[in-house]
Amino acid sequence: MLNKIIDIVKECGEIILGATDIARKIHQKEGKGNFVTDYDSRVQAALKEKLLALLPEAVFFGEEDDADREDISNGYAFIVDPIDGTANFTRGYKMSCISAALAKDGRPILGVVYNPYLEEVFYAQKGGGAFLNQDRITASSNTLEESIILFGTSPYSEELSKKSFEIAYRYFSRARDLRRSGSAAYDMCCLACGRADFFFELGLSPWDYAAAALIVEEAGGIISDMEGNPVTYDKKQPVAGRAPKVELLCQDGLSGSNSSNI
Image 1 (cartoon, rainbow, N blue to C red):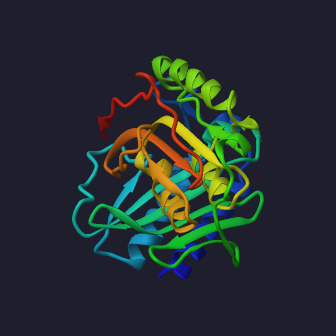
Image 2 (tube, one colour; image 1 turned 90 degrees about the vertical axis):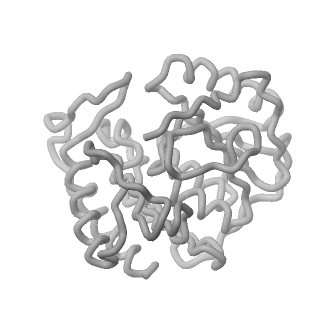
């Protein structure tokens, strides 16, 4: 099943690589800098068709579905972001991924994150470890003082954006340096393979993190909210990923922990 999902995701990556005239196919969604392109919709439609053909009893939980979302708490569900990093995609900033997770009873059991520009496939199966292409990956053994910090700015919410930069500086002041790629799924996978050591964003939806969260955990990392509590996969919420020796800092009310049902 995992290999078949990888094949489907890589096949859909060809749609991204073959994209042309992107600027004429951008549509504004609600929120600052929140875009969707015709290619997001094309990739999602292809993923939905191929993944549900693979497992017809599953429900499909995708970013670009405007209808009421189906319950994923019982049985199988595909949780999918067709292009994580759409703003990057629209500008030719080649840091975008396809993210696809298969969940059972509300928890991911398979996860695939694919950056077609770099030909990097990150994947994991519950209990089976995490991999980049054919190589097993593990989170680093760095402390916070040795860490590279990754973060998302939650640009769709002014309140969360302000909190994000306050928190980022708090971690940056203790760590070695800080980065932002514009793709939460890719940042989390960089954490999983030891390129970085801590990631957070205060407002992520399940399709942003479901696959990557499993990859981080299977690589020996830790996934939680900003206060160390477990995350769920049915609503928007703050997400933090970290290497085992990186501690969470007290947020003093800056956690952005207000979540909303999707």
